Amino acid sequence: MTAPKDQHRSLLLRVARRAMLEHGLEPDFTPAAMAEAQAIPGPAPPNGDGVRDLRSLLWCSIDNDDSRDLDQLTVANAANGDGLPRILVAVAYVGAVVKPGTALDDHACTNTTSVYTAPQIFPMLPERLSTDLTSLGEGVDRLAMVIEFAVDGDGHIGGSDVYPAAVRNKIVAEVKFI
Image (cartoon, rainbow, N blue to C red; front, side):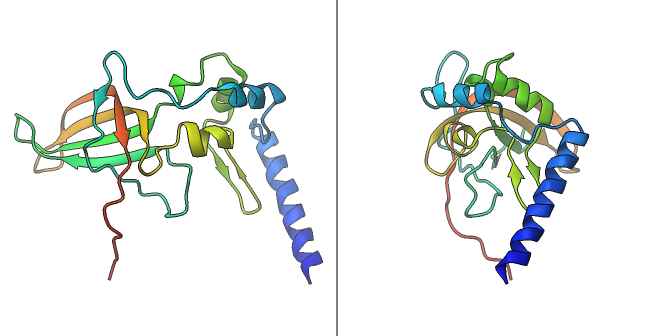
C-alpha cells in the first residue's frame, strides 16, 4: 500500500517544483549558495556599535513547539516615559551573516520567503542558517532587528523605532487554551 502513497507524493512534488519554476522561484539552492552557507563560521555576535541588549525581556515565539526555523519573536513591554505600552518585534538579522550580492542573497531575493507545499518545504535559506545560525531558538543569544512601537488605548500606533538588538527567546510556561 505504500507504493500508491509514494507515487502521489512524487507527483505532488513534481507539481510543486514546476509551479515554483513557472512563478520565477528557485526550488533548489545552487552549489555556490550551499558552499557559502557552509563557510559561515557561526552566528553573528549579538553585540557591537548600536546593538541594544534586550536579552532580559521575556521574548516569545508563536511558532510550533517542534519548529527550529524561528525568525520572529515578540514581547510587550511596560509603558515608557510617554505612558504608552511598547510592542517589540524581533526579526532574525540574517543580513549580519549573508552579504548582499552573494549566491545566498540572490536566492533569498528571488524567493523572498519559504514556500510551504504538501510534499516539501522549500526554505528561503539553507537549513544551517534557518534552523541554527540565524534562528531565534530557545535559550540562545542572537542578533535581531527590532521594530518597536507604542500603542495607545484606542489601538493607534504612536512613536516607533528600528534598531539592532541582542535577544534571547525564553519559554516561560506552556499556555493551555480552554
